[in-house]
Every structure is written in structure tokens, then in C-alpha cells.
Image (cartoon, rainbow, N blue to C red; front, side, top):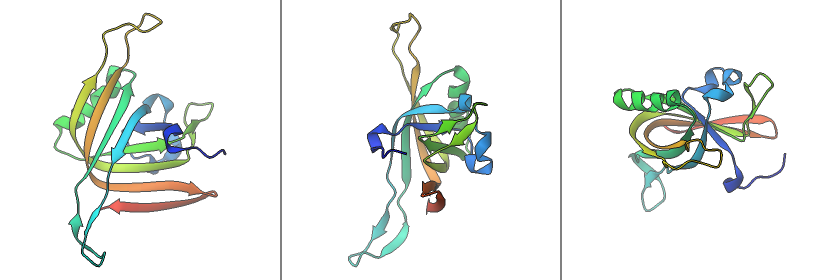
Length: 161
């Protein structure tokens, strides 16, 4: 596989923990991520040693919404006072059955939806159809689990607990 730079990665998000059954993820449930940003850090003393709790991790991402049912999950999770899992898959490919075939990297974020904002244009696109809605979603993360591939060996790290 060719080396891709970060601005060339294609990312999808699905509102479930794909680690429970990785090959059952349907392409139709995956939303294309337009923007993705989070920062995970600890407090450090003058010696560089970690102390105290992890700083709050706020993850912000923007997705293209293909249908109202895709937006509904974020709004219902916003109204709930519970945490949910969201899986981010990078450079994912799908098999002939439209199920997840492979992915380069992935991560599962467990957290609370704290805001959802819609961005859309009322203009028609070139085919005369309405433009798709972009949702800006903000999560307060409880945990982030990263699953990557390096020479076909998976490794898994939990950054925040």
C-alpha cells in the first residue's frame, strides 16, 4: 500500500463499537468525516512526570449526512445523558457485500455528545439536488482506543481512561 499523508486519508465514522464485530460494519452506516480534531494531554511537572488527572478530551468532527436517519443518532445521543461509542476508520475498504473488508487504522471513542450543529446550503448542486448537510459534532471523551496496523500486526492503546 502506498504511503498516504494525513490530508489524503479518507475517514469514516460509524455510531457503534466496531471492535465488537469488525466485519459486520455496513458501508451504508458509515459517514464520511470531513474534519477531525482532538487533543489528549496530561499535566506534567518541571521534571516532565505526569501528575493529576488527564485533561478533558474534546473531540470535534464534521460529517456529511446522507439521510435523516444518520443525523438522528447524534441528536438522540445529545438528548440522552449517557455515553456512546463512535468508531473512526481510516482508509477503510469494503467487500462485495458492502461490509468492512479492511482498514489502515481505527479508533473507538467512548463519550458524550455535547453539541451538534448543522451546516448546509439551500443552493442546488450541479445535478439539481439539494446539497448534503454537514454536521459538526462535539464529543466529551471518556476513553479513546486506537487500533492500527503495522506490517499486519495489530496494536491497541488506550489513551484516556
